[in-house]
Length: 573
Image (cartoon, rainbow, N blue to C red; front, side, top):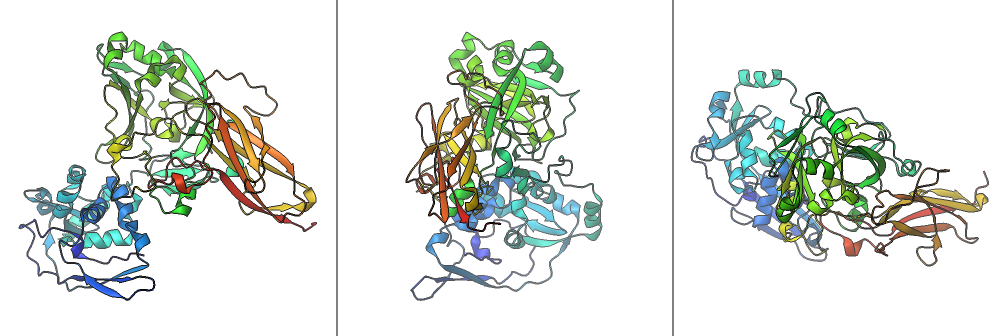
């Protein structure tokens, strides 16, 4: 456990800001006590210069929204090596000066110092900016209030973050300027987000991320939009369909501009049933092995829908894609209309071969399950990239770029990548790993729930779930065990709604999941069932049996055998 309280020694450098008001210096020191199991206590003081780069980055990463990854390192860095770490701080302070907003605004550069305000206080954060890899974004807040920036990221609304910020306090904002800030319109960028179904299990509210209860997930082959899992990185933008414009650039023909009506009238409408899955689906199981950074998704960050819209390949042809562009183009980049207060938009890219292939079935979708896209799912237009991780299915699409390079977006370059179990936040190099595109084989049990009771009087148990594989590979079998994997039975697969005969799936284009079910007799002497499922696709890819060998620091690609334990009740009632 790591407790940090106002420790100035967390920053390596001495004062870089001679312009800082000369209020009486705070006498601050940190005593760090390590108590190892079975070892003697040891006190150690860390003065400035005593912390390594990874700690410094973790600290400064807390200031900007892009610091979510670094914030995790701050919480969990080397925690497994220490049973208890306690920090005791003694601090003496005195009254600080009062500044006007005009004075604060003068400090907007590294030369003049970088000042910000937060809840009526003034902070000199120049040291943070000089150490932070995303310092250019922090500078956008310089001379103004932090609230609009921090409103985007709930990670900052924590006591320890505010205590770290307090070390950079240099004064108070003048009362009349505080009143002006308080009377300003709401700075909450999420205030216009749409209403959501109350059955959803919320993993974060700002931005909104939620999944349906597993038992509802397998009720319908086509997931109703209301309970389709929600994965937002930023506030949901409000888009006027009448003025919506999609730009396609990077090709010799110049920029192609399309309205929503253009997409509907100029290009044939195609329909594709495809499953989308978040890279972090089932992350909670990795957290049970060892804590990871990311939303604690259960097994329902996956859903299936019927999408309709223009094919991306048709739009690219209209924009001038041809043999000449094919010689140099390697990627197709997407930008959304969702953005943070700095103007940074969500972005991603896919390989050009996927984008331009008719068999790739990539859509610029404007319908979901026969209706216009809901706001949470990208209204009015989103990309649907069948067989590919959800992160590349960019919502609220505003721009398409054909390029020799991948998207430079944070979410393409520094997130959604897999690493060895031995890689930690000190050694991770995001440039060393490819961005996730196609996802591996996956299956999970939706019914019964872990810990459920099964009546012995029923003599049978029914197990239900889903199975899916990325890249258009078709699930051909799901094996289910009631005894932890000692013996197996083959589940019945379903490729559509009950009572309907599904159309044959073209090879390599199995974009939708299979729902599966097994009804089996209860073992006569068993008091508990250890139910396990595993899926196999038509390339004979299979799920790994345990989580530990595939554990990674971001908790992505979690696809081990899914397990639930249920108890058998002898109660006749």
